[in-house]
Length: 193
Image (cartoon, rainbow, N blue to C red; front, side, top):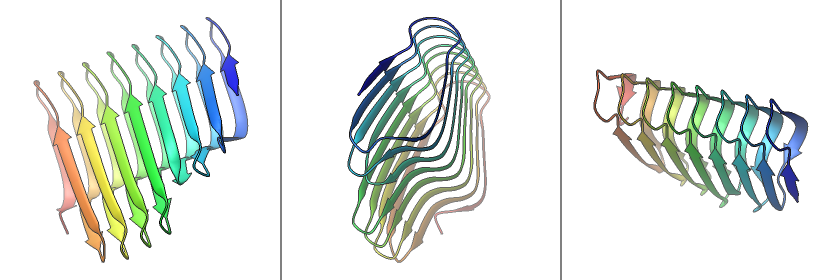
């Protein structure tokens, strides 16, 4: 499935994006995508919102298995979700988020979670600008689950915050954070628990 809305301030609202090969291009403009689930059932979802102040809201970005590639281009962009990269029961979840230049924010309750043998990898690159990545849990491996989270916030005065970073509860977790040049801030209640 290919969806191209062209240039302009576009909006896409749906329950589920995924289950197969889905390509969404919204072009330049201040675009918004709202969905309960983006990426599931071993499918691949590619989203390119072009330049502009874009926003993506979802409950799940990659649920169970599959790959999601999000490029929201230059601008002051926002990605918000409850879960980014949730792999369950032997599933493989891969998420790549690139937000280009601008003051960008990525926020989720959980970023990179492998449960019951699930394998999750999340790569977040916010580009140059004063960027923020916020979560309650970053990199969590539970009951044989494996997870790897790579965060690169580029140049600028950036902030990375989470209550827990690198949690291993019967699983494995690897978290790599590179805040680049600038006056940066990394906050956590627990690191590598």
